[in-house]
Length: 158
Image 1 (spheres, rainbow, N blue to C red):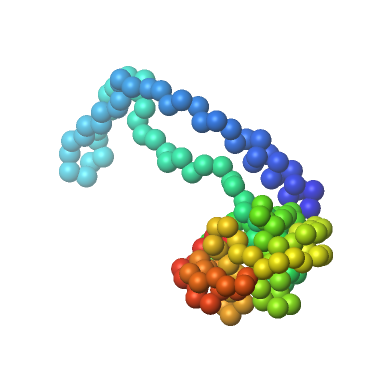
Image 2 (image 1 turned 45 degrees about the horizontal axis):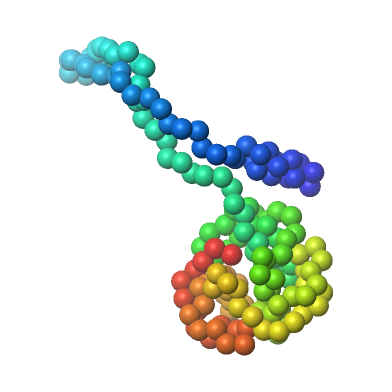
C-alpha cells in the first residue's frame, strides 16, 4: 500500500505546467539509392525538431464506486463504464453516492474512508454518470427521478 502511495505521489508531483515547445530550422533530410541494397545518406544540421509526441496529460483520477465493497475509491485506470485499478478511498465532490441497499443515489452526510455512514435525500451525480446494478457498469443517465435512473445511455467514466 505504501508503494502505491509513493507512485501516486510521484505522478502528481511530476505533472506540472507544460514547458514551451521550441525549435525550428535544420531538420533532417534522408536520401537513398539502390534496389534493396540498403545504401543511403543522411544530411542536415539536426538542430530542429524532427517530430513530436502527442501530449497525453497527467493522471486525473476520478472517484468511483466499487461494487464489491460498496465503497468509493480513486479510479486510477478505467474505461468502458468500469474502473480497472482502484487507489485510495475517496468521496465524490458533490457527496452524491450510490446506496447499494436500495439501488439509489443519495446525498451522504457522513463519509468515512469512502463509505457513507449516514444517508440524506435523493440526488443525482452532477456529471450525469450513474452506476447500473443491472450490468455493473457506469452509464450516462438520460432520465433521473428520485435518485434512480429509468433510462441509461452510453457508457461513461466513473
